[in-house]
View 1 (cartoon, rainbow, N blue to C red):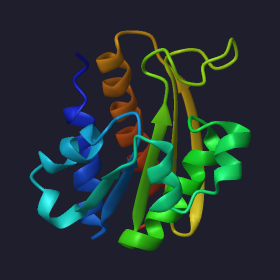
View 2 (tube, helix red, strand yellow):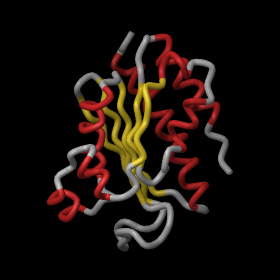
View 3 (cartoon, rainbow, N blue to C red):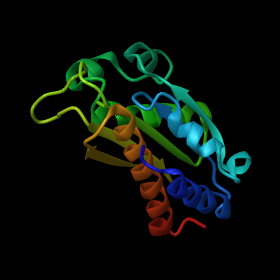
View 4 (cartoon, one colour):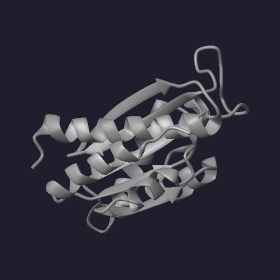
Length: 165
């Protein structure tokens, strides 16, 4: 398995330094992202919470992702992932919100242009969404661990770029 914890630690430190909280809407990662952040020294300062929304009905009912959007773009898409982040921000009111969907295993919406290993995540920060699409190789666990690493790096990078202090 990939060792994502150093990146998560650095991200938690960056959030704590800026006195910001983070929340997660997780589909493919099924809570592992929030768990990773709960294992940091700063977890009590930065982790607001998380929602596992593996099934599309949870995305629709709790996060208010329109069914038409899911039907049009599939549950594993940048468009749905962005709506998940926006919906979670309304529920948890954290300064940073991250949503993640994707295809760590076969049986979803994979296509030749969106193969197994394709992961989508969106970071909501300071009223703006930042969309990411990555394609990883490996076991389902390795794909999720690589996604966590990339998310932690991306959040840290955005905090540095926005000068959010």
